[in-house]
Length: 156
Image 1: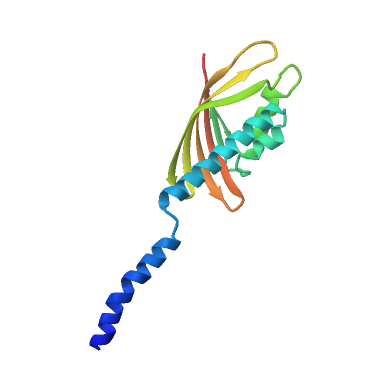
Image 2: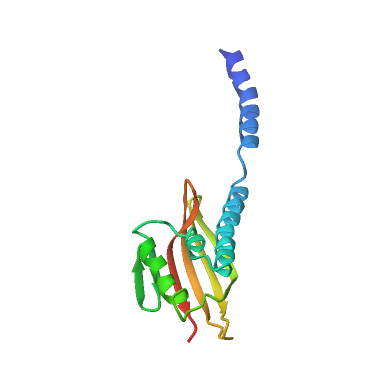
């Protein structure tokens, strides 16, 4: 019995060390998740600048439970959010302009949730430059990170 105890005491630290070596550090995983969330935003910015609202909307959760707040208006659902964007930015007399996100701060709330703060700036063909701030809540789904809540404000 004593030999088994000694063997366990010798092997346990070796087992623990080999298991720890196989487990990626938490901060590495968090960094990968932050990069993935940032990639969604970069992809959205590029889609917007190519005037592709469908590709832009791929960054949002395609669900009736998606929420979008702008000013004092609340939009619920992916389709209603797409319709809002179409009415505001791609209907006759409305242009999409060139979008730039900046001052991004991505805070991981866990391995499958993130909170993002940032600024947006549009440069319109007529020279106008609407801009403002946003906060986003992201959730990780099997097909990647998606925005589940967007609260956007415009400068007055």
